[in-house]
Image (cartoon, rainbow, N blue to C red):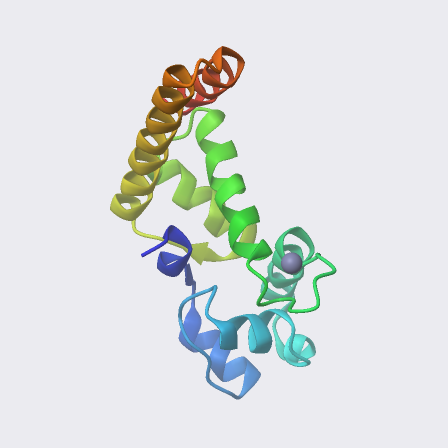
Length: 150
Ligand SMILES: [Zn+2]
């Protein structure tokens, strides 16, 4: 399962009752994207929540794809966001705190940790392939990227 399947909406019950409808707890579930982040219920949310919902929509759902918000861009952008936080030196707990402050989302720190480990391993594999292929420039780029995640 991708990390984006393990990102949840904070105060989910409370938001559902403000919107007077139900939606899944997973932030990237299709119905959550439709109802919470693109829905017409924004006006029903309290101000603090509304701001964060709008921030999320602006930062992750702003692409022009025809399938928006179900095109996969949101997931890709969110993964970059997580990796950027890691590059700034944050550990899993701090990353969860920041996503909660920024967007009212949460994840389990253990899931974030596995995601970061997997990212590093994927980059290691790419680096090895690039080395084998004699693509030194690529190998070097990937190595630098990987080191920023450690
Ligand atoms: Zn898109």
